[in-house]
Amino acid sequence: MEKYPERTKIFKALGDPKRAMIVDMLSCGELCACMILEKFEMSQSTLSHHMKLLCECGLVKGREEGKWTYYSLNADIINKAKRFLDDITTDKDNCICKETADCCKGCGENE
Image 1 (tube, one colour):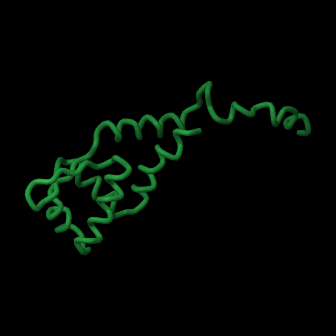
Image 2 (cartoon, rainbow, N blue to C red):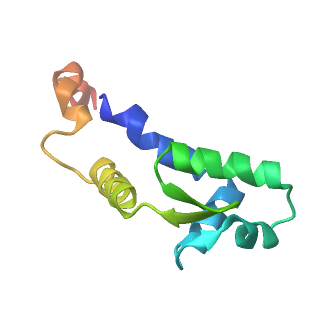
């Protein structure tokens, strides 16, 4: 259960269309904040807010060079998110539903 809050932060960050678009842009490689800003009608402070959330969840990494910040995707976190999504959408022996499988014994008897 402890993995859910940490792993779902990524999906919460991607719940905003502009942040999902930013991630899509970064899939082509590292970009300067100014290049990302060119694609959107938003202020620099709004972009900073979006980038802060993407960096906080670990999906995006930022590096400073002079007065500019360059952003790129964090491949390790992306792979963890993919595995998590696969894990929660695939039947498995250790599924959360099987922890309390005894709770519904007899449910089918009334049919």
